[in-house]
Image 1 (tube, helix red, strand yellow):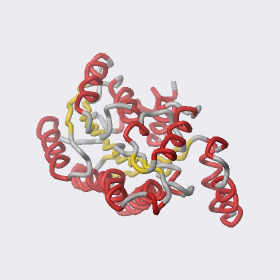
Image 2: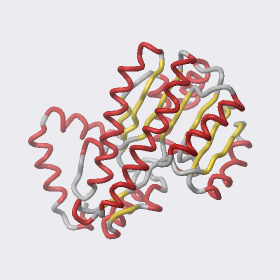
Image 3: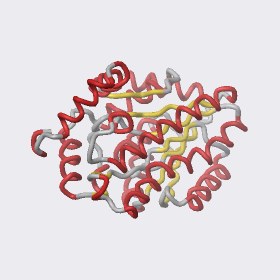
Image 4: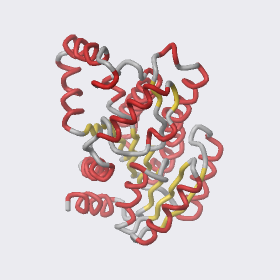
Length: 280
């Protein structure tokens, strides 16, 4: 019932009911679309995988939503801009913009090539920058809107063997914090989602070192947090106009642990990182 109340709150606040979601072919992105569809939102759903995206369309329609699909790489601004312009020309605006598209990447810093590092930056950080660059002017002009940037607890935990991923997620957190302050006078809100492992398909096309990607994928698969649970918590926090959305409780603990006891936190992370791969 909590998710229904949260989406109802957002729908009442944004009666235009228009959302733009990247990485909506599966995982968190698809679940964001599902919940909005139940409230009859019109939803731009984008993904790099056109086939997977198309498979989601019928479900979103059945749930009551109006899906509009675009297949492109968020690291490339030109098709991103074209998709937003097309959606706005068809439906008049965007009330909620969700920058969700991302890619995993594990491996020690000196094991990850510069080309791979740049690719991760292009998707995980510049993809979010591109979305914000397009959403912000529209929402400022409309005098209302809410941007959700999907980062990760990795952006503040900064565990070893995840340099490229951690760096991009930390950048998304910083971008979100800065925009929150800049946009408050415009009645445009920004939230940043920072979960630990959620059972999604993020590991499907991970970059970096195979053995560490396999460990990360194992942790994703064993997580007790589902995409549905993460989305419910996120929409509830957005309805409450929260900037930081940290989940589950383990992530909240780490969030406070690092800030109040930084020396102990880094000793803890260092100890964890030295464990054999199967004992993480």
